[in-house]
Image (tube, rainbow, N blue to C red; front, side, top):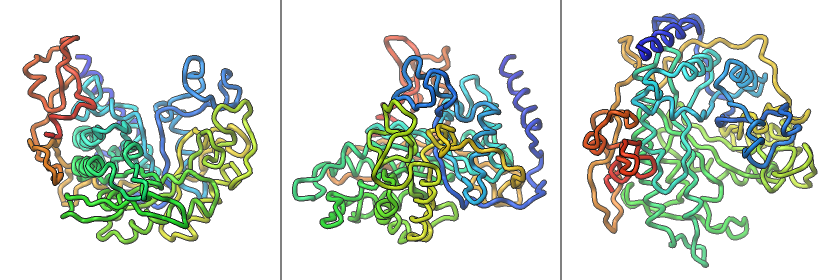
Amino acid sequence: YTHIAMNILNIALLYTIGLSSSPFAISSPSCQDDGYSMYVWTRGFDSTAPQCVGIYPPNKDGDNASCFNHNWETTEAREKLFASCSIPGREITRLFVEDVRSRIENGGYNADGVCDGDLMALLSEAHERGISIYALFSVSNADFSESYMAVYPNKFNELCGTDKIYFDGVAVNNEYFSQIRACSADDINDVYIAEQQDHLDRLALAKQNAHPLPLHFSISWNWDCCSCSSSSYATRELLWPAVGGSSMSVVQHMVNIVDSVDVQVAYIKNSTMTTRSTKPYEYWEDKVNKSPSSKVYTLAYTNPTDLCQTIFSPHIKGSSTAEDSCSIGNERTEAGMFQGFDYVESQLTHIKGGIHFMNGVFASGITEGWPVHSPNPNPQVCAPSTSSPSHSTSSSPTKKPSLSPITSSPATKSPTRSPVTVSPVAPSVDCRDPSITQQKCDDAPLCRWNRRKQQCKFRGAKMIRVFGL
């Protein structure tokens, strides 16, 4: 009865937040996803929190946790988020949003077995403003666990979606490649060849599991090079058997696999931001058959780190003051960040800026240079986009594709590193159901039996059976 009541409440919510019951009730033109992108991690900095006295703490431990709030779960948080996306001339039209996994991993439902109300509100309110929402997964392990999570948004779209409630794409932030990027002393990429090929296999699997939603991937500028000096630049070449044995830059492989990318340039000087963006941008430019949602972004860090020249935050990590000095690069303010975007965009025509991340410290009010933004008094109102991958292109009013989770068929490793192949299977059971038997748990591809606790769990990082490796 509890589940029935919650579903009734969530259905009521659809109407409370102004959803049309007909997919054809279009009263205004669709808005274009042509602005900046931004990461929305689960928690963002609260500059008014008494514990931190306006200084971004070096960690979220203990009392420091009180300095961070959920970035989108409440009505107030969403109002602030959308106000920050509507700065005139600096609109943000694509968000990579974390804290969605637990809300959709149970076959599209949350842990209570229903469509998540807060998530539905976020998606509806975003689409009314012309903002695309990508479900963000970030584990960054060798198993590339994000690849099996990529199917969850499709299940949510299928079971909970409406003409305004749907994910526009899947975003993956897996930075394990930084641990396997070492080259030999003569700048030849021959140290971690098998591991890098496997990483690309798993990225390709993530793309396949995300389909028909587009896949976004975050890359670091220095993944492209064994030697990154301008005077002795050496590209990190890799032969990848999955594409017929083609040898090219690792980053070019990545760009070709996914729909869109952001480039972590990790610098605040105009010319360096441009230089570090150039190679991935050129790979993206050369990519054939790009989709309308295909983009490339130059990503600026606004959160504190150890080096001032890598961040637009007004202070470095561990600072005792809200502002400290930096002799390198642009002014460490919102205006300085936008100046960097303008310069890069003037040199690389089709690139756009990307912000890392909401309330960290963008829009946090930590200093006058990072203001909290007021809602746009005349916000654009957008109709459901007929070009969304979540919507049917046929005349049928059914908009969401029906997809089953995808896992790989059994395969054995070979010296030629054959690409991971996938085939559809029946929807998995709810691995967290306390009544599930060990046999049923063992038979479910995304589940594993915890012998110590004698209960079923999601397989998590141990994806051996899912990948068939």
